[in-house]
Length: 163
Image (cartoon, rainbow, N blue to C red):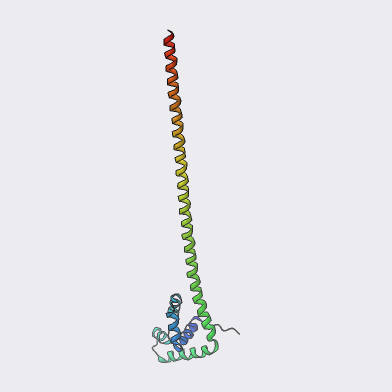
């Protein structure tokens, strides 16, 4: 047989358990499980706070809530604890998922930066090689022009000498 509780009943059972064992709740928060404490904080409400938010300030409502809590605790308190843990685990899973997503995003950004740096260095090396090749080509052209000028002066000098 499976017990199904409403969210309000779950909250009441958790509050009752914490009230019965305050040292366990304090130890749980003190251990550094801040995400669990954050999850538990808004979901755990006391019968007193429930009566503050109700329309009638009647103490019989508080007694009804407390007595209803006591009767439901005896039938399925372990289920309520497990459901509370599952909620905390869901919160922790979400935190882990977001951390993983952030880490993947940062890894992707780092790879993009490294790839961009690599492309920049390759382009710089290519342009340097092109400039060097152009410089060598211009040097060869200037050398051949000098040789042609020297050869043409020899030819003109020889032609003038024959005349």
